Length: 616
Ligand SMILES: Cc1cc2nc3c(=O)[nH]c(=O)nc-3n(C[C@H](O)[C@H](O)[C@H](O)COP(=O)(O)OP(=O)(O)OC[C@H]3O[C@@H](n4cnc5c(N)ncnc54)[C@H](O)[C@@H]3O)c2cc1C
Image 1: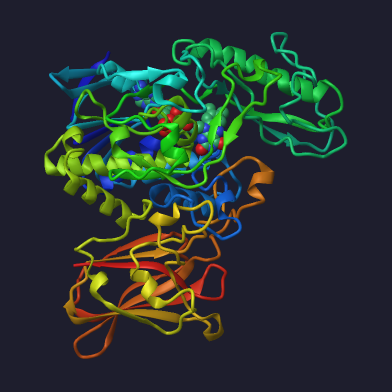
Image 2: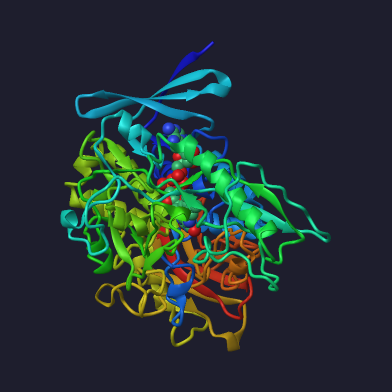
């Protein structure tokens, strides 16, 4: 029997992909009571074990980090997840990422996670959504979820559509936004969907017999789609993003037909590799393959601003930036593999990182609807870059934080857009939580570290102690980083002198006593390098995987100097591998000096600290 249950919260997040998880965690950590509904049994969307796509982002898989070590990998929640996965999942199990996302959500007291629960309806009163309906078939429950703010992270935009929010579908014509990469005439075509696979090499030949309905491919059909080469023992362990199809259909209404055809295509490609000539694949066999199409594109909502090609190419500044992107504009033929004469992707590199404004994540109608992920307000061309998962997660963190601020201030997201003071509050919270926003620096009046004097046991010329208070926590200057006019050059971190060895310490001193309740530290985790769970062996060889990043401070203590000059130990940490560490002190002590002593790192020969914040 279906039972109806009413839940009340501040923020409902529909969809638990990279955007939804980050939005829910950010809102919950910012004090909002959050319900996260995910229609399937695991979180992660296209990165989950059901699809297995690797998360990439603005750093262009490390390309922006060469040659100047420009640090463009996303910080904040997605960095926390990446670091956790790199350390706890050396085996690169897809299910471990599901588990880490699940654990992160379960660990938040403000967050109620409803798995297997699909949002299927919305109740709108005037200009506001008052409740969403969600169904959990496994328990025969129907939830009525009342909230102040609703965030649609479903990819397909189901919640917003049910609430009557306007959206775009397909490709804009050149005339509409004046985009050079747009098609001449608008159409309803999108990027297609994909089924990935994993394969394993055995110590004996492994036969493969394709089902009779599998498609047949020749070498000519796949001439622009690199797969396997005869005589080269090239890894076949991870399938092909270009097994893409369905962009000329409706990726929502035709999803089941697209799945069936993709199975025929994916198995047909494998049949070609195994049985269609010598591909060096004799001992290889399929280990896993998806049944759930990884969907690239469907609806895109219409917000208060539509992000477009020129914003990305010129890196136009937005005063309401809540995230940044940097992946190339990555467009594919909608026909996918049925366009054998075309390359499967055209990637237009972007010179600089670019802003993503909050206005592109707030619906014009209803006034309390926000969105994050691949359904934000962007043209098809701009979406070609914003769609990658670390960018989706950065937007998710921005939107979740903005939703929490809207709730605590008693305004709708639409009203929030008209309040520069609240937008600045959102941006400052994001910086505090280790998100990066181009050109923004710490101006948090509550952070008493900003008025401290700093000195260290030793420092390098490029890594002065004072850098921990520069307000910026990474180096983004140089080619491929932030636009030169919007960033301050420098490493923005303290680096102790390797010749003096470890331990190394850094002190913050005040003229009058402070009473810290919370100390926040940001460490270096090698943001210039690529880091992501991937099932491609070649890709993983470019990363530090299966262990902490070598730049990170592993063991440290924080001490406070009492009035009588004695040092009291407040915090002791061993084996740290995270970038942001937040220490809440149970018993605040009055002090005029805090000292952070770095005892060991995860590999390098000196200590690095990017930022210290102190809150009373
Ligand atoms: C084959 C393929 C290759 C790609 N390559 C890359 C790549 O290499 N790197 C990269 O970063 N990005 C890549 N992308 C793009 C990227 O995967 C997507 O743009 C990204 O996943 C979007 O994130 P999202 O959170 O918005 O949506 P999704 O990942 O689609 O997540 C949406 C979530 O919402 C849930 N949901 C849907 N409807 C409902 C509902 N009604 N109620 C509750 N929950 C619901 C879904 O189960 C899903 O978990 C690729 C995409 C595909 C398909």
